[in-house]
Image (cartoon, rainbow, N blue to C red):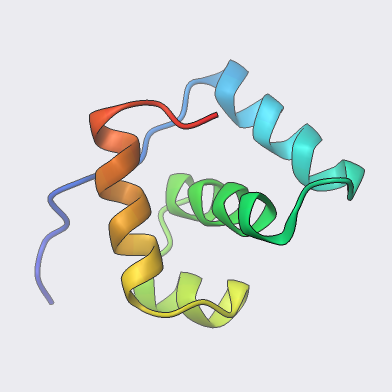
Length: 74
């Protein structure tokens, strides 16, 4: 398996904010899934595992990791 080029290591403040957002249930589906993907990537899950857990395409975790690495996502 190829090594990940973009590793997600959230700061505690970022992690708490994402957890709050996902627990409220008021987010649009796209933002909710993005938050879940980042949280699961931070936990060390592989893209294939995230794909199954969040019901997204395989490209979504890869794209989001790359985007997060370049700039923090709201």
